[in-house]
Image 1 (cartoon, rainbow, N blue to C red):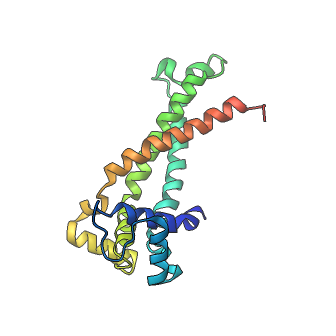
Image 2 (image 1 turned 45 degrees about the horizontal axis):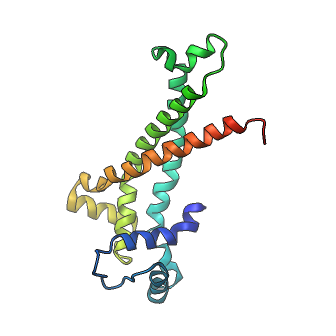
Image 3 (image 1 turned 120 degrees about the vertical axis):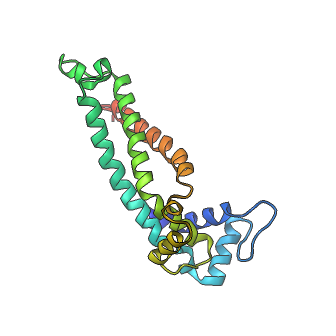
Length: 191
């Protein structure tokens, strides 16, 4: 639901980011409101959802992959005996609560690893979303866009820009889940 609700903003952000300084291409506007008005005026309200298909194909699997991997990685870190004092099991075997610092480290590492996997696996849909959003409605559907990218650039083209995306997404998701879990621990019993 959130991807659908924010799709027009994602479209405008992507289109605005593709503008080269000093030159606004045909069919683009310089500001957020101007871009929104231009989209509605030239293509109707539905044009604000250009690229929604690949956006949903990126975001829904990303969340599923992220949380699946997060739990797997966190469980592996907690139960691994080869990590010594860095393992959660080191403390639970002694009947002691896992220190907050160890819990935070596990959550951050698991969150970063999970985001890395999810970003890598959903990269092609991010590329397709971007291509569809900056092409003013060109490449009528997701599958034809994937085929065109593959034909023009090969498999490598489907992951174009994914390293930059990882640099943005991985630390952001690691910090988000760490703050969330730490907040739960701090406020447990308070609220």
